[in-house]
Image 1 (tube, rainbow over the protein chains, first blue to last red):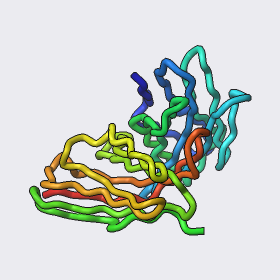
Image 2: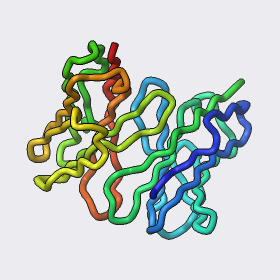
Image 3: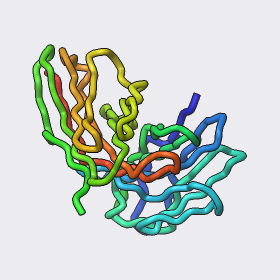
Image 4: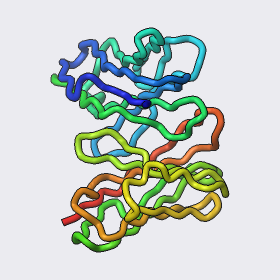
Length: 113
Length: 115
């Protein structure tokens, strides 16, 4: 069955430090991969997506993610975080031919000054 | 242009009462989705509508949950005889269509609290 695992429920980092939020998935078919961000008291916003082609995808706000098919991972990275990046981040997977998104449980990113 | 809107933004109801949640998708979006987000958890798929096709109800947790959508317009999610475990944020999303993985645009959600 399709599933998404975000290995860290909370990640605290200092401002201007690099960060990596981990995401692993399981699926028996081809998938499309997404990262969404949810700022406090706001709806979900798409950060980036992998559909095909280059395995390194760049998104908004300086985030990027790399699709690793052999490790079934899609980790999110940012080289230098800002206070404004404090939010909940969700990894999601969509199987080819399916319509629904399957979400991980989320990672709360907290940026300390 | 306007995004996905949902109403009410917050709803407090007593156990056993029925509630109706509303979603207005982005104009022109043929696909509409409902998800549930329980506290500290990810989003769970509930139901999917695409145009006039039969909806995919595979995510509805019980027969107390139902949803309707007329054409490509507003959708309502109804929960009958609410239970405390129904407390969650209910999110609606819409997208251009199917086939390709069109981006789903999410509304701000309705926070439901069952007391």
